[in-house]
Length: 498
Image (cartoon, rainbow, N blue to C red; front, side, top):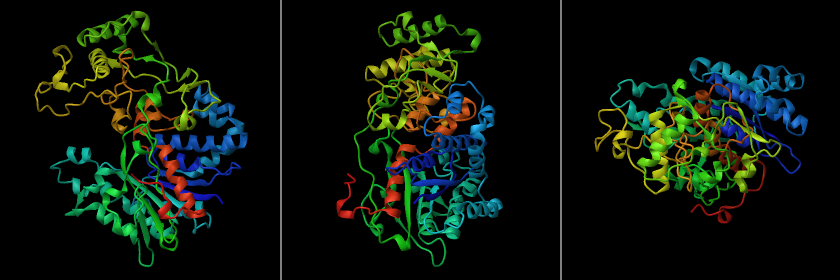
């Protein structure tokens, strides 16, 4: 049985990708996303493209030639959709993906779409997604401290749209994701998490759900708020990403046991991106860019870090095209998930431009990280200090605004701020002296290499940072499928949560 999925606040499709990737031994999909709702136009384009690709690949029983041409930049997105072999699959994808800002004003429209797309399957279907998290995040609350309009931010209560869908259409299971800050966020004088939990447990009179943890094998009544936090790095994701994820089970299914995610050894940044080809960024402004000027900046950084001076022959090539030929060398679970063996290269592995001062800081900090030292902004040599009045103060705000991602441990959390600058996402190789590419960030989020993000580079970064890691979503989807359709292990036989 293929289980229908409705994906709300879908972003570029991280949860969607994980659930859609699960198939039985005969290749039949366990889940089928019948509708995705997202307000960002570029994320919607990405969702439509991915939905088209899934359908096209299934029909072609292999990698579609038209999609390879798109990945390699041989054809544009409109040209891809205009191909005869693509058109029928694109039509369904465009019906699946709805560009819509969920809210009271659009509720009737979204309800009508859900009713139509479920096509009468109102018993065993799954709702996935998470309301936008800016109002709950610690950074968001910090930025708006003292703002009297903050308590009225509609993002505090967007979960009500999620709740409305549950109350009207009664999914068998729902998976709701949000930031860890939701546990401590206050709204109208009380903790918002308690309010959300109570609402989700009883969306309306006569309808109840049991909320379970995906990491703690404990009865629902005994769970604490922190038991709903999933630490992605403990489950095979090469990124320290901590999120609240709620598993809701309709009352008539609550007698069924559910498994928890198995713990795994940490996966390092090197294991995720270390095999990608070295690329060099360009200097900004472009009028000052040249390999020699770029190399001079690297020499300055090496001297300040008292490191061996790099040779000019080690300058990585500038990658200005969307496609870069290379043979991946990843292995293990992550390699199997990320790498498409039918491809001889990788897309979106192009470094952004940096000002010379940032290049020197990046290289210096990468050299220092290789020596086991991680200077704060006030500890930088005077030549590299940012041109801000308070940069050298001991209490300087955002003292860790420049952060090298370490080779031998999971990365820090990839968030949408990566779209604004690369300061928090410095590549650990000082010979490259740059921030992470879109493809590197996507790998840390566990998007497969054949996943193409639509839009310019800023829009691509933004989408990557706003997603749920698809590999984590797949593991959650396997638990959900066993709960609905299989024979989950009893609590006594679950994998230990610690």
